[in-house]
Length: 164
Image 1 (tube, one colour):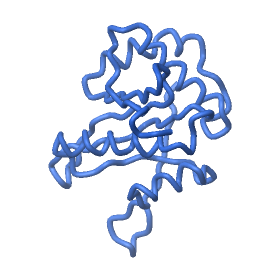
Image 2 (cartoon, helix red, strand yellow; image 1 turned 60 degrees about the vertical axis):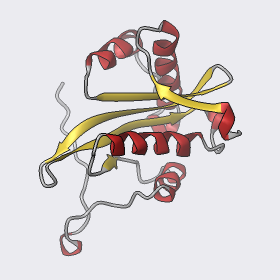
Image 3 (cartoon, helix red, strand yellow; image 1 turned 135 degrees about the vertical axis):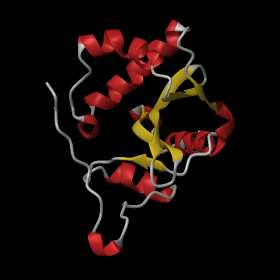
């Protein structure tokens, strides 16, 4: 895919086709094994765009090729207390299967990085499943590495506690 045929821009939540595109691309990712292998529920499909639009700290970018949404990144601005600066956490990066390995993921990552730099962020963060080698190669290629404060203390782990 030629770079000229790819356009990356923030979602315009007032355009129903763009809101639908976010849900469709994310559903494609969720349905795939690396996204959990389970399609989005009807409730998520019905409410995701509205809920994301309410969040002022959300950054949602769509990649378009010839009028079709082919990928997206959903990220949220947070804050690093140690640096006393904002940061961007990439929550979802998804590219439709037909458009993978064509530079869409790298272009989305570059767009998020450019926005983070524009906002004066100190870093980008993300989580990735260990077995998702395709994504890990992309993230390493654009400069991501495991997180650690002190090598003697080991690498940071991502933990969760479900609430409901």
